Image (tube, rainbow, N blue to C red; front, side, top):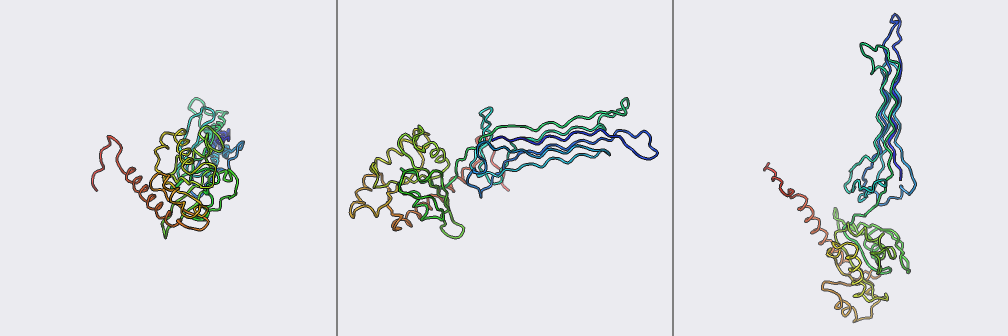
Length: 340
């Protein structure tokens, strides 16, 4: 999208006009500076739907100066609210300008133009009646791209139709689109899971992953960029797909590793979904074919869901504690803070 700061107001050419003052000096005031275009992180937002391709945003121009050395009003800043996790890039240079993650974080993406000077500024002992001023400068113009990487505690990953959307609709108030066909979920969907008063975590239902996703197959690239921001991955494996649960897991881990080596080592939990569709006595056999710690559940009947949430909540609390401790440690080479 295009962003532009406001143009600075022009300086004024004026002279003092008063009774009994036949030769009043120059009194032209300066213009006002142009407004800035500012990005502001708002945690209540989860999408970039307000910023479709081709949109333009311009801050207000500064007002011109006037007589009696009056300065023109500065242009109002244009503040654009964006969701946390938005990466800002300059399309002209390809430079990543900022990674906007924190509530209230701001960034000026286009500065307003400087104001012009009125003729009062140019009066000297040798040039007592200047008849010129300077115009305001145009604001900064820039083409930027905004790429959203959602921020969630838990990311649900799995093949299309693995039951991710159904599970999210059961454990939270989110209502993702659910259908019995591939790629029902076209965009990440967030749900808040409440474990009690003041206790909650965020789960992301991410678009289905298939073999070749790291090379752009299916919705792969749209999906994989969001995985990097989740604290814990839940591999949801379905028993009713063409690939077996163990084959699904191998493919999922392989595509994560191809996209980013760090994702291959990301902490994960393995869940066998749709246990109500498995003949009695076969669930244990399927779980035994998966790495240790795998659990089963049925979002349709609710079997195993509460147990899963309890485990996830404990893992989320551990991840948050670790992150808090890491952020409180002094940087390498830094002196520890003195005791208060």
